Every structure is written in structure tokens, then in C-alpha cells.
Image (cartoon, rainbow, N blue to C red; front, top):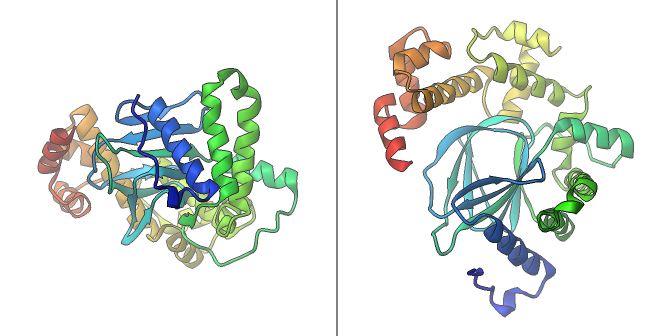
Length: 310
């Protein structure tokens, strides 16, 4: 089996460099074909891309994302984030984002780890551990990029190593996962995860609004009713929602609708008008206009491009 070329000796001066190389080798060994591998450790996925990809919107769930090799660009609304082996990304609430692989080839693939995050686990960890000294800061985005540090990468590496000793997974994986969450909470941006998990925070109420929209995006949106649902004033909901997602609730709903319509046309063969109607659009022309704005082409042309890519 081909190994990744080792980094120059001058760059292997720290344990972080050695850990990155080992993590990349582990991913490449477990994922021999391009795609995402759901592992025996339930929230852990290993991802390999052999080609640079176009940027396609999708609904990202809360997760820790670590690149062992390569680089990736993520777009949230009009904002762009780039992360690589020196920086990890955390998505703290479900949000429609675009992801684009910047560096990848069959001989030099992009290799990454995605660990899904359950806010309930963070809440349980906070309740058990007591005050963690997480600083209170103004509400930030529900997505952030932070510099990688040794203790966090070491914990992630130990979790991936468990795939080679399946008998140890049931006992040790939950402990290592808790350690990873703990280290994220203690990181520079840990307050963003903390706010999502703590039930009496306004950010947690915004996350409830996001969950409601994810389940009811096809229904007419009445902001005053949504505000009452999550116990916020209309103005506070708008302000906090945009602070977390970079979008208004209406813009967020629009992206969810268009992404679902795209999925229905691609996977179930629905015509554009039928897909638009199913996700809540009454006007086919409005659906086509908004679809073109988001995906860069009308439905038929976009689907043809997608099928060529597949």
C-alpha cells in the first residue's frame, strides 16, 4: 500500500507534524476509494477526495472537521472560511453551507475526519463537569475555524486508532469522544458550543428556531409565531439568528427549500415545477429565479451538470 510522502525533516520538528502524518496514513488505509466512510465508531466519519470538487450547498449538521491532508473552502452566506491541517472547523448548529475541496488528486488525496456533535452530549458534559471556565462572549457564528493544538489532535488520533482494535471501541470510544468535546469547550472559541448547549441562553433558543425551520421549511414562515415558539422577541430573533447563521430566518428557509428541491429532482426524478411546489413554492418562475441565484444555473441545466459530475 502506498504511503503519503513524508514531510521534510525540517517540518517534522513537532509532535503535531508527526500526528498529522499518522492521521493521514490511517485515513488513507481505511478509505481506499473516494467518498465518506461511516466507521464502527458511530459519530466518526473518514473522508477521502481524489479530485477537487465544485462548491455545492448542503445542510451541514453540528460536527468537528479536521483535515489531515489538503485544504477546503466553506462558504456560509457571503462569508468564506478556509481550513487545512493547521486549522480545524467546527459547525455548532445545522446550517446550509457550501464546501469545496481545493487540493486533491488520486496520488495526493484530500483526507479528513468528521466527528458529528450532539449538543445533548455537550449539555451532559457541562452538567457533570460543572463550571468549565468558558468565557462569556458576544454571540458568534455557528461555524468557526480555529488553530489546531496538540492535545485535541492527539485525542482525535487516539479515536481513529481504535478502528484497528474493534474490541476496544465500546469501552474507550465514548471516553475519547468526551475528551474531544471537553477540549473544544476549553478552546479559544469554546463559548460558541457552550452557548448552544446551555438551555437558558439566547443562542440556544436560536438553535431551537433553526431546528424548527429544518423540520418545517416547506410551510409558510411567520416570524412572530417562530419568535413565540422559542421565547424571543421578533427583533432579538432576527438579530441573534443572523449573528449565528449570517442569514435571516427567511433567507435560511429559502436555502433549505432550494436544497431539498434539488435533492428531489436529482434523486427522485421530480420535474422542477413539482419539486418547487413540494418544498413550498407556489410560483414556478419564482422557484426558477431563486434556484438560479443559489446554484448558478436554472434547474435543468444545473441537474445536467450534476449528473455529468457524478
